[in-house]
Length: 351
Ligand code: MRU
Picture (cartoon, rainbow, N blue to C red):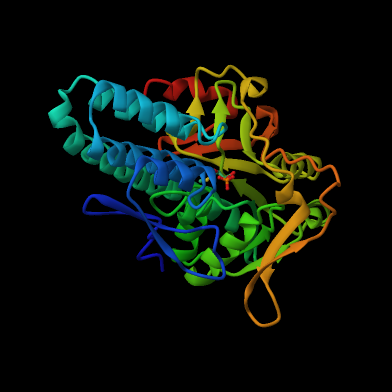
């Protein structure tokens, strides 16, 4: 199954990442050597997914301190990394932890401590993924027991091992259930404009999980037709009241799921919950380049990576990268501490 998830690895004084901008067509690994390399990797989405963004920022801090571990360098690296992407709060969570670990130390001790703290963040995320997998599997198992056929699931974006340091968030329960022999099938929405659904299809294919790629617009109809038993996605920032920001398009699925009585779950680690953010209106939503809407990427007839313009470059295009699903649409939030009603997150604020 999932024996090796090479999203991010330390190699001596460098970091090796799987370049997600070239997936699912090419498996290409990149070496990060500097703070700038790490910041570019996050901003340009060579790494992506909230937990992986956080872990990369932590390792980016370690890369920065190789050259200079002074207070000024620490503050500079922190500022540069925090500015890379605005929505995933795991970025700030990880950098807060790095600051807590490094700021009290003398400069001489900081480089080694930075690598250790980054490794701890990565290991903690992998452990959280595993726990999410088990809690979510219990939900899938119970639902499967009521069906005399394979469970029909739907997900959006990519919240699998590519997006984390372990087996994923939304995909962790799916992998755990599949490994446990629960028959299931996953509808994977392509997730325009960046098509992270293609990454999910690629992951699921590698793990042998039955799945079907759908156009984003097909989700509502499949839900209306009773062809989906449960929807599960990840999140990039969950407000204190349970409102959850995730990849744009998540909200529409949650609305359609509610309309047709299908449970909609968010799976995310504690590091995705922002208790300083009272509700969804306070979550900053990343607005990305209009060219992500005007251009599509793929392989041409010769199997060569190619870019196609589908709208003129003067066509106005709007590209919010995330949307917010109100807490009231969620059947529950699955985190490493269990499954919580969206309005009951206070129970884990201090964990
Ligand atoms: O823009 P991305 O690809 O970084 O967005 C990723 C998502 O929205 C994921 O669903 C979310 O980060 C959860 S990942 C475990």
